[in-house]
Image (cartoon, rainbow, N blue to C red; front, side):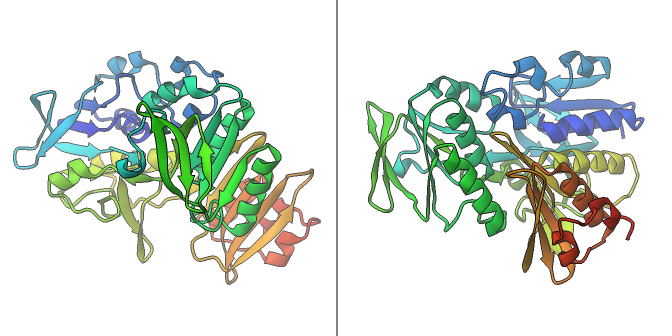
Length: 404
């Protein structure tokens, strides 16, 4: 194997090429990205970068010189239009780039509002990449009114930034509660109170019927409960979908993402996938994780497997969200929980929620409780499940649970 091509220059792609080099690969590495800048962090985009608290260069995962210094051929502002599996080459920029192994780290794309309800109007934004945030940044002027569509973490983080900048914020969520798809009611209640305390108008069980415009720019919204809003701009945070078009066109198997085996190999033995775009075996099910830790860990595992490690990817899920002065840290996956235990921390707003299925600890949501998060994560990783009543007791020494 002499030539490895990686399509997608995000967190997964950058992590993968670095791991190949530190793992001893001496052949040609080509990393192809659609954006005009080197790989960068996405989480700060909608927070510190949008607030003007982080310069562009601080977003970069590594200095641009790193790639040349490590003989990584970085192609920026370039789109791969096709994969020629028979001749093992990708088509990009009108030329063919051959590979012995190809890795797809194409990430995900934000869901947008349909044009039929006004998704094409100026002033309607999504939050995904640098261009999105640079485009919406001038909108954040004190006193303006922003409508946020979607009560997941993307929408709530956008609401926190807008409220912090002195904007009037209305957030609508079609489901019965915010965070319904990803968190227990206790966590939803916590963040609902937090945002309302900061002046955010949260409307649950309410959808967007359509937007109105003047001169092609959004000016208002009609909601499903019949209410009308006058708005200056709109942020859409209704989730993301895996970027699978390139893989599907090439005939690779797709199943909630690019389908891979336990080592990250796709239905074509010469092609691998990692990060947001990839789904992989997880117990008796298949899983696709949308997180920075998964992008890094899976990419590094795939790099090792390309070099012959033959190891299964076993995720250790964790996530985070920053809203106002609250840092939410999540360990594990709460899918299938039937009990939530509340553990109060020290100080107002310091709390953690522990998810159980029967007697099995599945996940922990910790708000300004880093110790609860760290202990919960180590317990889950070790397969240990402390008694729920012991966890709920504020007198319990959490660290002692690790020794039990």
